[in-house]
Amino acid sequence: MIAPQPDVDLDALQERIRERAAGIHAQTAELARDLAVYDDHNGWCGKGMRDCADWVTCNLGFNPQNAKALMVAAQAARELPEVGEAFSAGELSVDKVRLLAPVVAPDDQTGWIRMAVESSSAEVARRCREARSAERVGPERDRAHRAQRRLHTWYDEENFFRISGALPPDEGAMIQIAIDSAGRRLDTLRSDHHLVDLDPADDPIHARKADALVLLCTEAVLGEPRADRASSPPVQMVVHVDYDVLTGANPAGRGHIEDGPALSTPTLRRLGCDSTVKTLIERDGVPIAVGREKPAVPPAMKLKVRSRDGICVYPGCPRPAARCEAHHIHHWAGGGPTELWNLAALCKGHHTRHHDGEFDIHRTPEGDLRFVGRDGKEVGRVTGGHWKRPRSRAGP
Ligand SMILES: [Zn+2]
Ligand SMILES: [Zn+2]
Image (cartoon, rainbow, N blue to C red; front, side, top):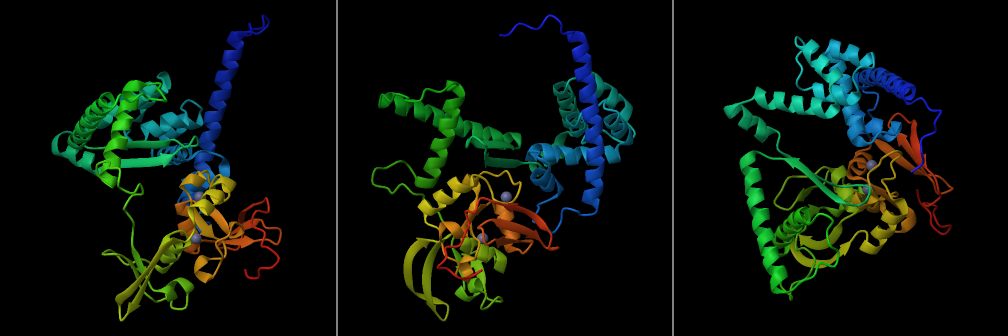
């Protein structure tokens, strides 16, 4: 470690750091106020964005969680004027305002603000959590637990599969029992077969839980492990669609999930971009022959698209390409070829919005992509020339 320079006045430095942080909070409050107005006027609409927070993520360099926090704080600062004032004065950070938002009532702001100014973010989080659970008891709390149940799964920037969620306590207990029992089966399996872990876990107790969850899910998909079984999951979504719907020859044609709801034409076309196609030859609605299954984009090609693009190609979108779909720039349904220069990684949200017509993707002669909103204005572009059409090919 480098020894501190003797001529640095640490007290003065600390004071300056505090002042700068307060300045940032005050600036953030201004930013939040502008964003609330921008959101009121739907400034982000028609460009392929999910919501204003998505616009913040794509355009301002915030990650999705921080963008959401900013929007929550923006709303709170408006509905709770005293909180808004403390935010503008640099006394409260965006994190603290976001925590206060769901628990503070308009006639009860002063005490909460004093506590939040004097406490760390972690302490504010704890107090707010307590207030929220004290608010509800009995059947009301049960209902809230049911209403707020959720499970999020995603891949982070290190390609870890992440899980986060919240469940009513009884359902959580059921999951806990299942994980514990799978953990015990794993222990038995490992000791019976003298299995040595080649990648010893940093945190063996929690790694065992993770392994138990994977065991449960693998069994749910493949059944009990058996040597003679194929390794790919026997699960697929079957969508019936008239070919003419995909080509646009009959936009009013039908398409639906097998034994399920009808799907819109844009959805059917999006599914056509990146799906496994199994041809059913039908006569009067009765299948008379079944063709071979063929993925619209072969796995090796999809891997190339993902590794080339890295993230969703929509300008500013941070979603990793590993979670993206392979989109045909010249649409597959319109005869666009499944070749690297005609494919781009798009996350599900942007893929859906593109096929819904919220924005266009234009290929420049140099092979770059221009993203154009409904209003005709350019949203952004991706350079690098990866999408240059080979000379021999014609088409859009
Ligand atoms: Zn597509
Ligand atoms: Zn995206």
